[in-house]
Image (cartoon, rainbow, N blue to C red; front, side):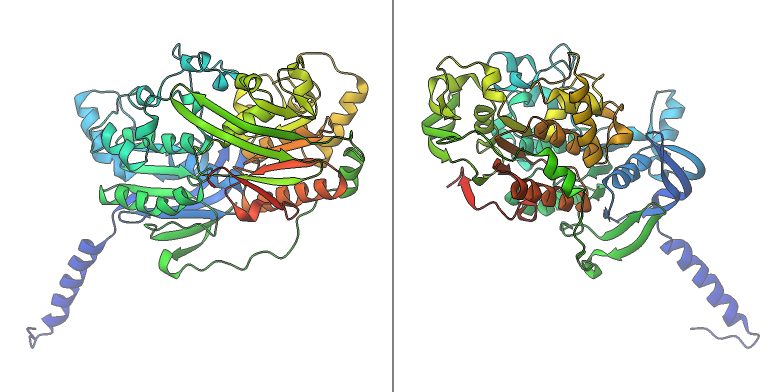
Length: 515
């Protein structure tokens, strides 16, 4: 250190410190300043602030699934910002280059987004599938294969992600020639992640990416993130408070005002779980449920049931019997055959007629109509909402449960309208009654589908990942609601979930397709 008698030492220190500050100033990828944000016509945030610095990998948690989705949609420029500003320096060089070349461009060329909503189109680029189509071996081929889907769109930028590298990373090799409609829920989620990589993004936004994945896939998700980060990618994902994957460096808690708290992931500790029990009008629920149901010897009976498509065997020599009033958990990894088994139970799989298989004491293929199979069964699955026509409102979808149709296509009686109104009231959907199903939030879609399943007072209730897409509070409320349904009525339950905390306490029997 040089010291001058005239005091110039201080000036030297100021110069050095200033240079260090310039050198150490973090590089900002996206900056949000006091943004007043509207999402789908409703206010999402009053004053959103967020700085995303290079090297940061964020997990965003919160109590509202709608707010978490709105946050990601804001980063990708899909919300209305009436006040404040959003800057995206990560795309500055790319935009400048494209401007000079006179080429059409967008900062989104450098981003990928995996939503909780995923929709497929057929080879004619129309989205006019019907639910049964996925179980019909010939008609399901009208949609693209996994390979065709991943190669359909050409990325706007070059990058390291080849088809081979992507399918190996996400374990899709054995699915490459499979129709999109035949994928399980978890397989579809992995495909959505793969498609995001094929866009060669520098920024990857993911909305609840672990939803629908089995336990093994969720455990491996941290390894998946590490591979992305090693390739120079930056990630923001939304997730639940108890699922922060490896590779994440920062955690932020979101509320309507914005990011309320942030942690380094190494310092993040789970908040205490809420002790309050969520509640609905349980007296109203009790009045709407059946007090008694027809007497049966068995609800489901299978003897050596085997189902396959081409050379691939999905179910092999399955024996299973469900007695009235029993409560079953159906479990197995993604692709183990759960969806195929459920398709038999809801009367959608044509292979049922060649099997030793009874529903409600009647052998399939003994002259019963499809409506006789469907009438005693209530069914909820997240993908069901994809198949309703665009004009089907929340109220119409609930009423369609009385007729077992994917949509309401006939005039209903005043009594039926009043019954639907009771279910709308119970699940706090009254203000959304005339909103199309595809415009509802995921949590409101789930309550709508549950009301549709219950409005006809079913003997058998099948819930397939039925609370998927809900925030943590709504998931707890959904579980408690199912517990109340089982407490108030003799309904038989088949429940599918990869999350132990979602399983109703009355479930005491398990069919494990991997056992």
